[in-house]
Length: 261
Length: 231
Image 1 (cartoon, rainbow over the protein chains, first blue to last red):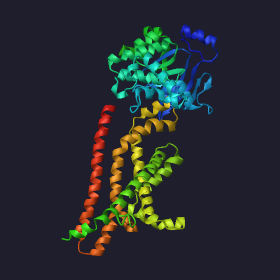
Image 2: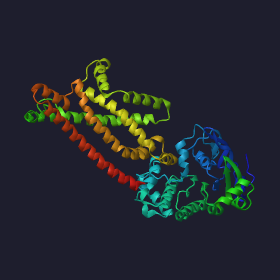
Image 3: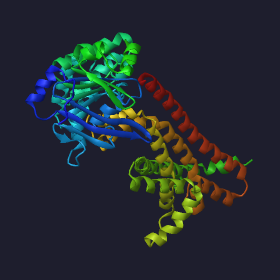
Image 4: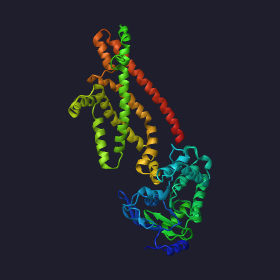
């Protein structure tokens, strides 16, 4: 098994306890036409770990996490979840997606449904949960993200930050094992970023396994177990937030950090 | 001027010989248009969904169907069904049925394109969000994509309906007793008032279509308000 050189103490311990990585990305390659968007990506994520992926736009970071729930298909390599290839023909792709929640930059709430229905739709249709139960879970989640009073409004009546918190609640309603965040705060007005980050921090503290594409370096510093830096389809730097912010080795990482900090 | 000819035959223009005889006139035209649009909606939805499929065995037959029908005059489609039905079915179809099938087939190709455009106009993120929570393709279409897309398509559907209402006049050619044919019959019988008769039916067509388009305009305004709130 491949072992990263710069694992945090926490993950090393878990690595010893478990022989198998929770989520493993092996030699993943992807092309968009002639554009080589992911080049030999290798990465492992342990259960409960928070991995922050950063890098300039076009570096392939969003594509990488979208490959994890197969919103994008890879061309070469393999992704294993709980030791099993997600590309195996026996894998039910809808089941896989139900277990790996995703939150998008543009929220992508359903504008024709109320907040409550946005959240209960998938549990009712995919998990075959009774409506009452789905609604009580949805209200609990809305309370957790701090907008229970908005349950019967339509997405357009909410602020951006509130919409993104609904989107997080919608993903959590499926009780996923892993959460993917694709630049969740990039489309938000500055004053709304923190309300979303706080929800994500809570999730991280509760032990959710998270892969976050984000430029929020404060968030990375505070809750990430590891940070990886991608550029032009490659992982150039990986390490603890401590290492990443204070002692980056790669020139392009240094240049990137200088840009955004 | 001989407006009394028009006046005496107004019943016949509006409802044909009904209730003593068969229904005809404007009522027949409207029935054909309503039947046509309903049939064409389902058939068009079916072909439209096939057309946007990524599976070649669904996509290409739909493309061929849409292109052939759109590249053929409606009059030709009406003739086709009228003359082909006896060969295919072994017996003739009533003229009105034959015309109705032609209208459904013809309009469905246009509806299919409206459906395709309506679905493609939605942000890609809607489908991704739906699939991302584990809904399958069919569920995502049924609960997320179509409810939004169909609402946006309503003005185009009304347009198609207006267009079809006028086109029912073409059923005249195979002997369906709709408004245009009723007018021709009365004109041939009386011979003294062609101007009055054809002016009258033009006005009748206009009234029906005007009611529909003003309804469509109001609907568009209403939907625009919905969308403005929805953005």
